Image 1 (cartoon, rainbow, N blue to C red):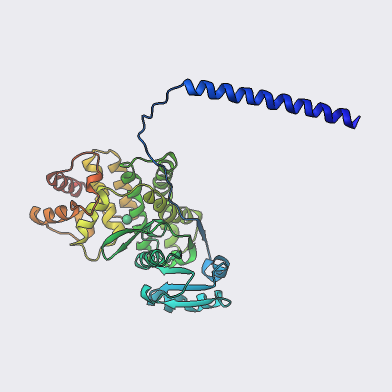
Image 2 (image 1 turned 90 degrees about the vertical axis):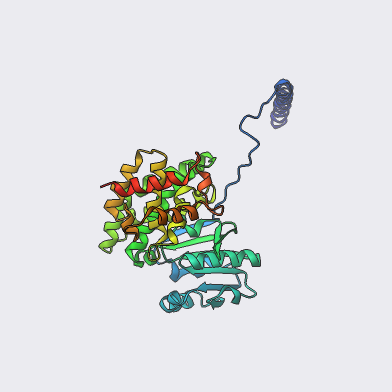
Length: 362
Ligand SMILES: [Zn+2]
């Protein structure tokens, strides 16, 4: 009986194999007759992303869990972070050989660079890891920008492609302790991401992420700010942190910036005590004005509610003449920035007029 069953199984198997071969042959024959025309261009789709993103409270106290595979760990910090967190870091990494350094040049013989701090430390850690061909792990202590999850490092004013970090670890408790203005600036920086990314050829997933980034910030941004004001770490705060750091950074790494960021770098020359996210947020209004985008009104209402700048005076500029504004505009149009990414040719006069229109809104 067992033997008959086996024979039957063999027959069935051979039948299926022959039929499959025949179908494959027919398929190849028919496809060989078909002519294919590539009409979308010869494009390579490559997604840049951090290998691991973790966001939770009290993460810094358990740093060993995320660094167990490394023997020699260099931790790059600034003096503020060192003074505030050195005990937590040493306690968490008792079993490992760690070097706490303040300058990237002091990193030696390490398997990994761990940057703990604000945007500048993130950039230095990314660049140091790239130069030494070792892993980079980032632990941001400020929610003011999307820098941690991007592949770019700004070093001495130049944009350097470093690849995305291996891990980005976000301790929500540390983020909540940062000044509230930093959180609002992070929202301002991340709001530009959707509108600037639309000027690039986006993959489906990046397009979706960019929409989610915008929707999350507009839906939960105000509530998150109110929660933080009351000292509450809520799901609205978590969602916004994810949008600011992970989603915005991931979209930027797979697209890029455009007029809003370019103009913000022009304003940076004369606005000394204004943060990056505030300058990009105001500049985004100018970009939308040039594009005749009706969503400028929705954004202005949101800005007024969360405290992002709507007028020149909000970024510290009072009674500026056209000649001075032209210097800002000329700087923003220099080759190193991304004004050229706009879908239309933008003239200096268009930008001047748009700045004046945005500033004249009630
Ligand atoms: Zn930015």
